[in-house]
Length: 169
Image (spheres, rainbow, N blue to C red):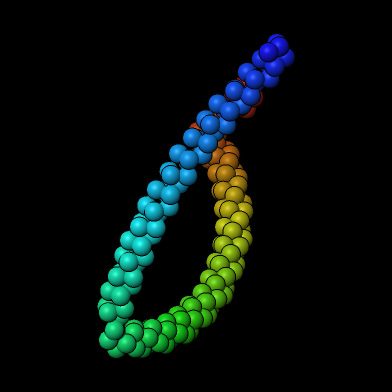
């Protein structure tokens, strides 16, 4: 045997060993897949049986509940009608409140206008009265000054204060 034959024989042995290993792995995987498929089938049957049992219980619970459903439907219709009635009542009440607010606004605006007119009239009256009081005060001051002058003149005549002393004062 030559070296070339030995190498080919060695490679052939390695390939056979690798093929055997892959065959062993594939056999193990197939066995594991069979076991998983079997467990999956059992689990699916259990889940389906549980689902069917739960569905059967629900169907039994809902048998005879037609009366309850009809009552609930009637209650819903009655509630809807009541909501419509209350909505209409609230709409009317809102319109009435809006009308009252508008009327109040008009009344308040009119009263403010009247108050402003009254304030203007009072201001004008106060200004007239102030001017009249000023003029009266000025007249009184003028009258007092004139009276003082006359009293002094009378005192001079009665008591005879000479003209020289008048000039000094």
